[in-house]
Amino acid sequence: MDLFRNMTKKQKLILLAVAAVDLILGLLALWLWTHPNTQDISSYAQRPAQVVELKIVPTPSPVPIPMPGTTLRPVGSADPVATPTVQPQASAFSEGDTAFTLVIGKSEIPVAYGVEESTLDQNPGWLTSSAKPGQEGVCVVYGHRNRNHLKALKDVDYGDVITVKTKDGKKVAYTVESIEILESETELRIPLISGKHLMLTTCYPFYYTGHAPKKYVVMAVSSGS
Image 1: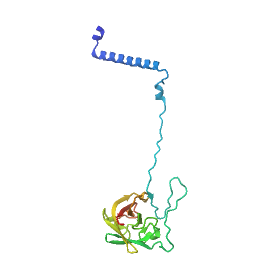
Image 2: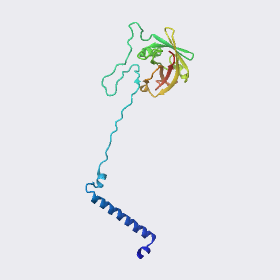
Image 3: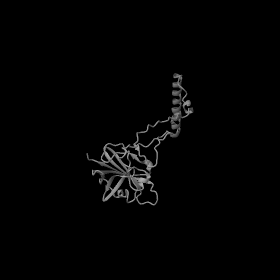
Image 4: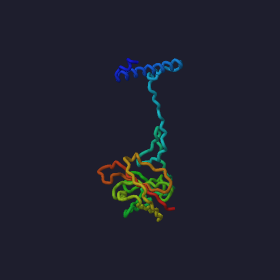
């Protein structure tokens, strides 16, 4: 006891630390002796790390828009899937004929049946497999960004009204609800939404030399019956 009292504070701390370590080792040895079936804890450090592969279930995606001159091919399939089309009556329309007219601001823009390259060289085109103007679904129109096509979209804002005039004199008013700029045409999708919608798609930027790389998409909704 006198020896402990004569120790410096540092020596006392070292002595207490050594005693604590001895106590811990003694307790560990006692526990291992009373549990003979317990594995040596050192074996866990020698085990290789296990890699768990997470399987991600994709969420349903909207319907891809069949771009003019392309064929849709599902992931993992070697067989091309034909673009869905509406089969009209024999004399219903001809590719390139005027389907309806868009009224965007002060511009009246004829829209032709179909989205073939030859049609889009002259006018914007209506994707005939999409909804008709005023019907439930999404009515899809493609067009170039020049003044004879869909350049008028550059001045369109949220809440503006775009009117579709059909050949039988019917007018369908659509209110702009969203404007989106996509990085490429591969991002184009027909949204799976209820209601009567109009989707207008052109290239972006509007002022660009050569082939504009992005897509400008205006979505509008009709509240009419």
